[in-house]
Image (cartoon, helix red, strand yellow):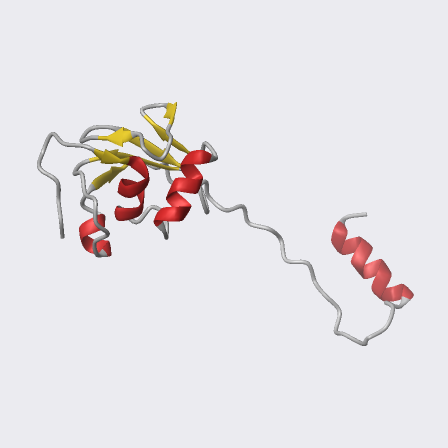
Length: 126
């Protein structure tokens, strides 16, 4: 585990990769070039430096992650240690909506009979 002394900075692509917000450093650099990484509200190039206290927003797989740098690291570390190098301010995901289950006929049962169609219409409220 290599941690930079307090007050120093490192490249944003290296920090995002080391903090395990992306799977590879190449993906972190590509995300920066595509505008998916912001440091303190500004689009970040891969060489943009980050220091303790900076807010980093990363859009990638899933929702946007909003983190504040708590410690500057340059080498990839274990997941438990990586969780300590930033403070996560990502809002919780919205609650899932309950979807009514749609009754399905058995495969190969053919078309519904007139009686079954009436029951389906009644069920659907028509």
